[in-house]
Image (cartoon, rainbow, N blue to C red; front, side, top):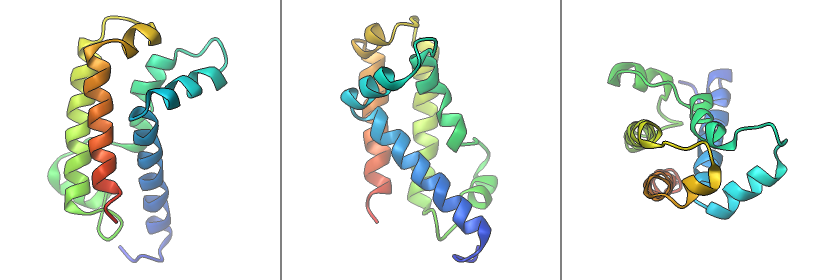
Length: 126
């Protein structure tokens, strides 16, 4: 991918979206701030899970290298996205509430938040 190509610009925007998403998930206060700004009808917990799909499309290793190509993404960043995706899926499956406050007091929140912070650490290396 040419770093100056339109595809590179889109990839960079997606990368920034992933960073922003992980920054929110890694910080309880950010999540609560997001809830406070959202309309009352929005299920914030569902949004937290579903927003990942705005930025990440799971695929096999070869497709990952095409979709999240160098030089915008590194191999370590692709691995971090896949690891986070697996954890998100596990947490979503284990979550039995629609209530954000209950979720934020659950072990699942701690796992998801830690996974977001870990992914963020990988992306912030450069």
